Length: 209
Image (cartoon, rainbow, N blue to C red):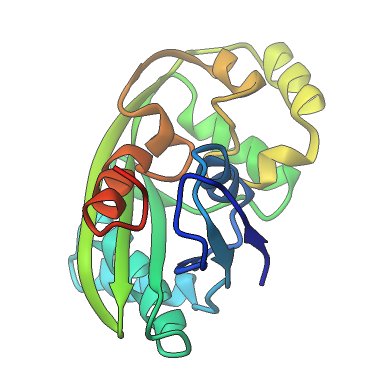
């Protein structure tokens, strides 16, 4: 695990991020949070298939995955506040995962081009293996009908970073050029509903109010 120190939080680390996401780590670090990292090992693909087959929504699935990740880590660190998070992309009846390679990334972007898709963003906090708080919100992303030439240029400019996020884009970078309208919380789109999470942590004296 890694740790980050900040004068705005308690001296002893009491928070763990149950995620390997660099974007989530960066958001928390930039906000001045003192935390450790312990990625949870979860078969996300299997759980998504099971929940979709059971008729669960993308939002319900995002919450369930966030909670499962946090609970897994909480079993080993019962005195810590464990942050779990997940994000689901849905376009019509289709759910999208992170692309496994650039060929899949191109296929994802081609499918999403000219359409509106939704990001379901979930975050939870677990302590002593019990969920003590969770939050979920939705962002609507209108991807413009860009040309094949632009897609070629975008993929070259973005490089391997397009494999790091569901939808094969990063809104904080060149991925912004893919869209003509975005409705939703910016931090949540990057992978973490940061402001509601900070409010909760302040209420529990993890962050100085």
